[in-house]
Length: 323
Image 1 (tube, rainbow, N blue to C red):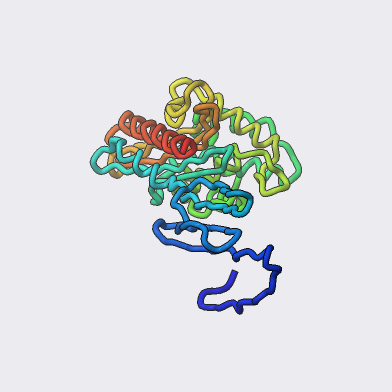
Image 2: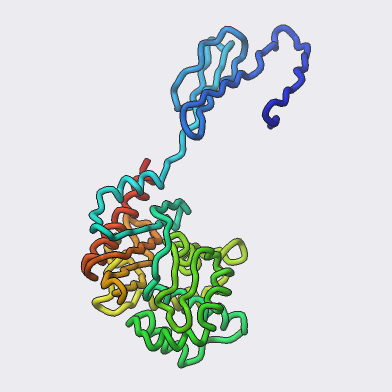
């Protein structure tokens, strides 16, 4: 393709009269963010004007004329669809929410909001991923105590187990080193022993979910965690205790979900951080969803907000896929 402002030198070619054809005419017409392009190839001059139809077709007349016409389709703006869906979600005054969603099969994604939030207990999935990566690098399996603590940390959201494994991975420094390998760029570990005050974005949590639940494409841009490590995390996140199975699971149309939730009342304000990350199955497709929120007056209000946002996110992506 020529660079802007650069001209091509036309070449004239002599052709036998009976085989003479006109060169393809290309007309570019702006009108959308991506632009609209018409292409027309004609057997000889005198063919009709370029139609506005978006459906490619071939025309022929008495064996002497054929034309191919096509119009490039504009791409779907999934972020806009998600923003539209989120406009119907009820948010308390002073509360904020951010969400990111991915269709595992197609790789299509969308996000709403970009600010950072406290992780609360969703960081436990990240702590476990970091522990598994460190063990993998060392060429060893998790020890029996590590597996026991990991199980309690994810299935029951046990804080003592999380604190022990936070120390084991090297606190914020260890988490940060692992997250660089995972591709997280906007997550910062909490100070000292305060793992629950790790800060993150919905987009970064979606990146973590890709590591844990994405397609098994090891060796070709796949997860740095091996299959055994990923299966372990998925099993635990599919077995959370009763009473902790709210959140992104609200977007599933059955029992097909795996998640980790986080909830934390802030002592400085009395307001709640409520978050949920995981995989859900809806309409026969798998979606990864991360919802972060803060400023809720009660945990129940935060849970309701997170669940409404998760449903809106999956619905928006399903609508985009249907177009």
